[in-house]
Image (cartoon, rainbow, N blue to C red; front, side, top):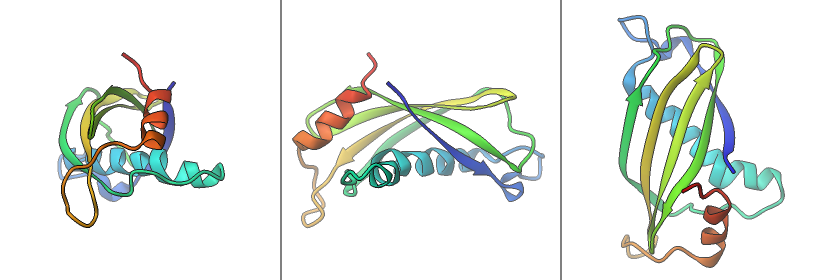
Length: 134
């Protein structure tokens, strides 16, 4: 299963070359990742999770440039790997113009007090397993 969210491409996301700046793709995936672990869960009456995680790594393949603003960009998220304290998310960013980018990120669960990695909880692991695609 995949979580599907969307984010709005603003006109000021465009750079001097007339396309969405590469750094803004990180914002797009971050907004939908927050929806995946936080806002969509609240909307369903569930407890938000992973408020205490950090991003350890991100890779993005830019496929079809986004040449305009003023529309919603769909972002699909799924889990490709679950470790003891980390997990890998995959992303596809799409619009009617096609598949704009694929990305992956490694998140690490951390203890807020110690700032060190911690084990993924049972509730967190349950959610991640629901979206696991191997």
